[in-house]
Image (cartoon, rainbow, N blue to C red; front, top):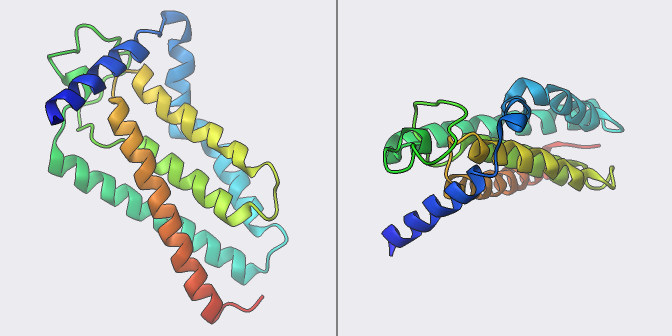
Length: 187
């Protein structure tokens, strides 16, 4: 059963990855880099402070930073523990995919997906009452995560699991924030 799922994962990667062309490579190489998204990160930080007490905004920012650090640590521990090769390093498929980027650490699960979906979910959870269109922030993790398939450095299952991990940790830390803010924060 697991081997069948892994084969489907490989076939979906091959299918999606082969949509790529030299024309779009530089776009996806830019999308996949964290610095490209710094304006979005700064905007979310500014919005955390918008119409909030300093104490509340700082508490939200600390929660945000804490969850992202925990997610990144969890990604690293999991990748090293599982040790799944990235598609560009997997000899069973690396000759039939477009490996635009080369990456040499492990694949399962995607740190890009975990980080970006956690970031976006936290933004939605913290800002949904202030900003009606905040759900549009999910464009960021969708593009950011898909770039990893396009570049040939992640399997679709890496992206799906990374996204789920990011979302779960966001809800967990929002719950922790709610618990402590109800006890210690007075707006």
